[in-house]
Length: 223
Image (tube, rainbow, N blue to C red):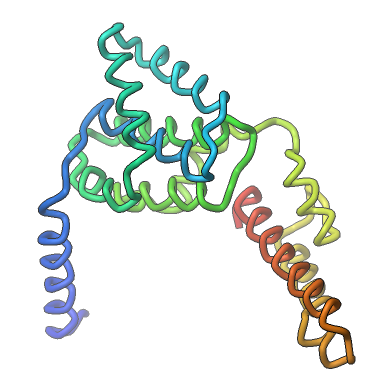
């Protein structure tokens, strides 16, 4: 049972969050949806033609009128300029039911996969927004599964090759190979073996790629 101190701390955190979010604008319906989509599209710096096409697809899925389509496009552009935290109040105080939340997160996943590429940042955004809506991680993941490409992306293939694992390798083996690759190529090991500065730098870059590969595989394989 939580102690009185724990209860007071939780209350203080909730109160602080309430005051922190009090000044934020609350976006609803298509204002929120298309701002989120715009934010995802801009999250990697470059907005692609695939992103724009996906926005058009989303307006068609919602059967928006011509006026609403124009509003949606304006919101999409506006979302590209907003900070991630600007959406917190809108999501924490979301007025729709569970089906509306589900449709919102599905739209976000479709935008993530519009260019057939999943970045760590895009993954983090959808999970953060789902968390603000009150969703569990596993449920957020399930919503995105239908929209993944049916083939392996180049990044996925390269990640598997770097860790020397296959598409059907169990999580235990992937973790083992990840640790093995880190141990083999860690810059401290290269330095301890008398490696040159260039060799240590190369090992540092390779270690970063191993980390990125493992993160991507974990996201795509759900473990």
